[in-house]
Amino acid sequence: MDRVSITNFVDLVLETGPDGDANAAKDRKADPLPEFYQLVRDGIVDMHRRNLSDEVLEQLLDREPNPKRVRVMERVIDGYRRFLASGSMKWFEPPRANYNFGSNEIEINPELGLAIDETPYVIKMYLRGEPLTPRRVQATLGLLVGRLGRSCPGHVFGLLEVRHGKLHALRTPEERMGALQLVDSLNLDK
Image 1 (cartoon, rainbow, N blue to C red):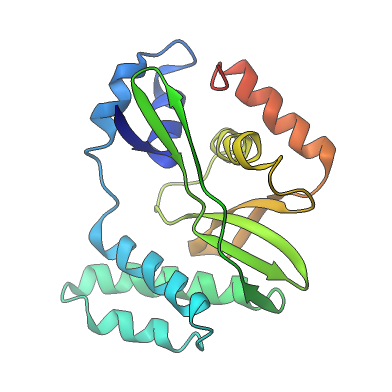
Image 2 (cartoon, rainbow, N blue to C red; image 1 turned 120 degrees about the vertical axis):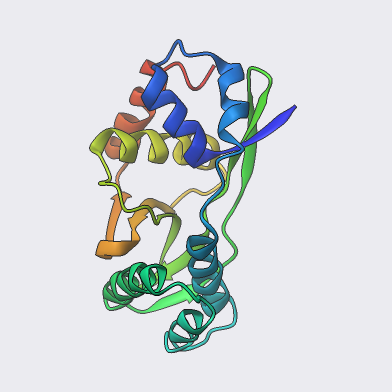
């Protein structure tokens, strides 16, 4: 069984539609997160896990030799700092799950578990430079809620557009149902 990230799976579904070839997902697994995004993502997670100041994110820039990538990383870090200013945050280990789709195992792997002003949020980070579309937001959040919602009652599920510091969140049962209906319409929950 091939393992595929939730991000690559959503890419596949949005490109091929609900009746796309499930086996094509294995081609997506070879499309890794660029190393410098992984460096920032891991740095953000480590900062929260170890309860460090956001100043540690600046140290990540020193580890990237390419000036163009440093500029991209600076924008990502600036956006994340805008998100940090939205409330007090305390780390918890985010839940994870897998599910089978054809011959693939889709990894539902939110990076952040944060109690923001005492409300628990389970957050997937979106680091790419391409615009985040409403359909991508709903598909990603629908997968998160569909696989983790029952085991996390009272949690808010979110997709963080890191560059802009904007959290797209499902806060109410009605919003959750809308995202789940989208997943059903894409035949992702079968």
